[in-house]
Amino acid sequence: MSDAGYEDRVGREFPGGEYTLAPWRVWLTADVLFDDPWDEVPHPVLAWMAGVAGSGLSWDDLFAWFDATAEDGPMFGEHHTTLHRPLEAGVTYQVSGRVVSVVRKVGKRAGTMDVVGYELDLHLAGADGREHVARCYNSIVFPRRPA
Image (cartoon, helix red, strand yellow):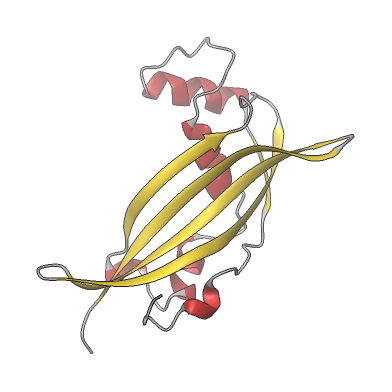
């Protein structure tokens, strides 16, 4: 349990939206990552890119939910992607997301910080409803400076 005062944000849903994995972006991403740009299966990092772009929030919006700004120095924490099926170039994914945790931590040297966990889900719309394609768990570390 956290004493950060942001527990009420756990469960808060992102506005959501959609994102299309444009073939040119799939090719460029593979090329930049020294992957095979001619591979028919897009690189898994595109699940995260699609999730962030289709979440319906800017970074500034997300930071504001936790009374922070970019100037406060938030840092990317953890990341884990689970693919339930391969991504596909040219396909439009429905994106949803939510805050799943808020934990206050205090380090000897780093001081006080809030670690916020959130998930981004990619779905395909289909005849049988929405097929879950990927889930990306991420965390952001918000340094908290004494007032």
